[in-house]
Image (tube, rainbow, N blue to C red; front, side, top):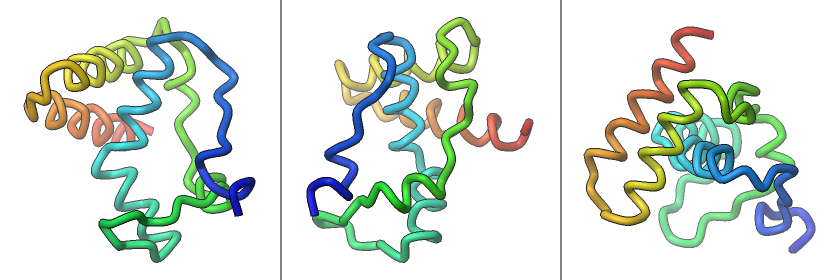
Length: 104
């Protein structure tokens, strides 16, 4: 159902830093692993992303504060990756997300 899929998520912020940081987090290896563990959805081709599962996999509040160093760094690497496809930026995103969860 369209209304129960991630396609229907509407962010409350239009802040570019927050949106890039959120995209970085949602595409990180750690988030994907947590999502797969909770949802059981492990297919690589057209997996279903459900809002009900997304609600169970909480996003750290720090990502919604564009003045936080972590948020700024995640946004920087996400934006750079969107331009260059340089996997160094993906590695940095994954490292930052791991550090975020280690320090919680």
